[in-house]
Amino acid sequence: MGISADTSTNLGGVIDRMATVKQLRLKARLSIQGLGRLANVDTKTIRRAEDGLPIQELKAVAIVEALGQALGQELSPRDVDDLHIYGES
Image (cartoon, rainbow, N blue to C red):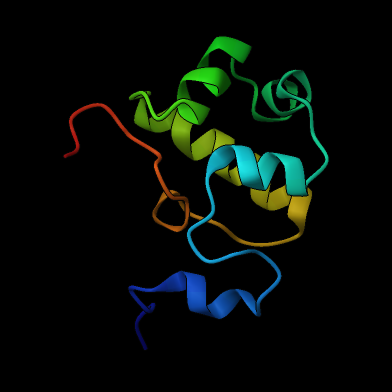
């Protein structure tokens, strides 16, 4: 039994489909600093992600997992709109 390629449909409507990092952060009621602490990444990286600038894959995963934890949902980088990772087009 495989995992669906479209994981956002499995979220039960708790989050908006393809929300941005900033939208998810605000929904989780986290400050940039709070998300940075939770994800263990620098606030500059959070700002870059929110601005649609590329970030390292490991940091993107950490941010998305921290947002998922704060929202009580399992998220992957594919679930986040406008999240750019170095080396991906």
